Image (cartoon, rainbow, N blue to C red):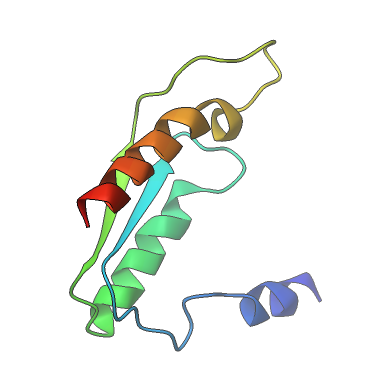
Length: 90
């Protein structure tokens, strides 16, 4: 059953980050719903993780070649750059 498989692969079950984590997620991502990151953040915080944050991204660099490209793909360059900047600050 697909639901059981998804639950088994739920990465935030039983795991509490011990180091700073910043999740970046585009609010319009249609392949991985933004709500997934919101729920993960809430779960981490409920388990006592104090240095976990979520940046809900609303901008993107338009590198689409056609109208079938997704936010998931064309928001990635900006998000990768933001994540790299954050890592360099750590």
